[in-house]
Image 1 (cartoon, rainbow, N blue to C red):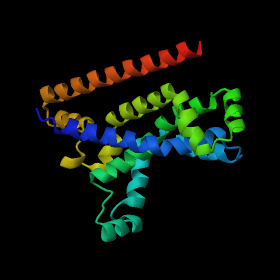
Image 2: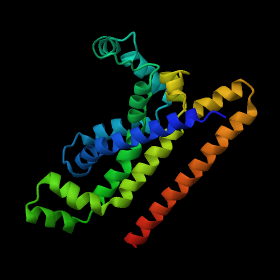
Image 3: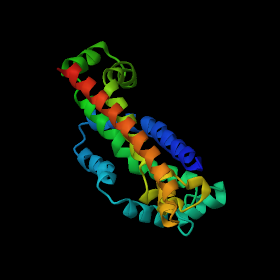
Image 4: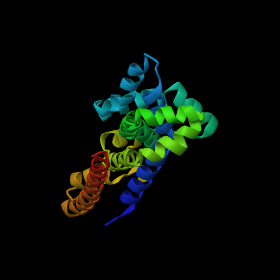
Length: 221
């Protein structure tokens, strides 16, 4: 059995999770603390991938970033960077598609911070960036870990979006797509081995997430 699809999957999930962690922190802080009335529209747009079919996102991704698009052609000509049928493409697609799974728990955690803590931070005159990294984020560690586990788990389970953007290239052949290919080739034993590994990994991630949520409820209680 070829383990390359699992290496590609792990690389994709790890990079997506790391990128989204640093992207989600300022966005979540804005959504949690900003008084801008229009933020509900922004938050709705950011949460759209939760219910949006992957094929819709994949279609627009290829339409605006594919080789036939002006943006895609620009990056390919000037930076030798192709967003279609490349690892960079499925990474960008995964970052967009998994964004709400990192933002949602972190934003919720920030919104649940006690009011007296926020007032204490203001009285101490701490800068927003210092308050965020030194006070707020350590307080919502369980929410952050929930976002990390959810993002990682969701990335390893991606199929439709990765297949549309990455095709069946060696560098974009994640485990979920490998299962699909082996099934089409009638290699049921190999497909079963791939599926069993994903099943075990997914179960471990779900157990981890449940433990994090239980710990959070215990502290709240």
